[in-house]
Length: 423
Image: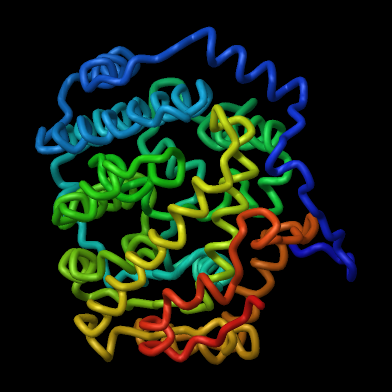
């Protein structure tokens, strides 16, 4: 629920370039440094086998991708010990989840016959209206969504059974994990509100096949970026669909709403995987999203990077967004007109209900006034808290201006009637 405060505090992060570390941050860095990790395919697979007691990873075509994934992380000389530990643990988690996925499919082969019925798929840059839209759609109980607690532990492990003391251990772990992260980086919640119930991006399911642009957000991995962009992503998207079948088997229904910015650069793979989907593409001035991404990276750098360098995010993210949006412009017209809607932020904020009705019409789902009121009521009760507003300073923090960044996106503004917002 949004805060009732009419004047949320404006927060200026004054130590982005020269962070003053808290005792908790210093302790976390020291603990991670005392327990170094080794990035190798066998180390990851062995840890996943030991965690699960399982051995069958399914098709092994993911192994070359995993090798490049790990090599790219290992080459990041400026990654802190926390970054390395987190990425190793995350990679093991994906491998362990894959083992559990393959195990439940082996025991229940009927899973692969489950039909994923006409999903609604949202693709749009961060801060382009996707969070609000996804929140509304996921409140519709006719649709299946992916809360964070389930995204990071899709298949229950032994010990995850509900008890009177803890009806959902997976949810409890997810909540504890986010609270620990927020205690290390308290302002992250302002830049990216999160909780165990937050509806996750489906990128967590693509990562089970060791692909996607995910690790680009967590380390400096140009080798992985180039490798990932050179590969046909239909295989990883097919694995994501298989994971959705498993999740439907465990906790239906079989009509999904999913979201990920990456879909904007993978429209051919997305359409081939879900040819009967309703595609919702959200659009907004990319400068705002880039500014947010760079500021988030520079803030997190105090524990994720050895040395603070505003040039790292400033040299990476404008170029990365340009690559993504060029692919979107190139491939947008492969999506069927009758199944696709472009949503513009300046229109969404004026009249979201009219756009929502059009999405439902294209998806073939009835949306009554009463049902629409229920969606708004749910979002009001379960939405994000307004913890303040961050004051951004592109020029002061990164030596860039909105105008200079926007010049690289003329092709995007020429294709889509997006309004420039950031001055």
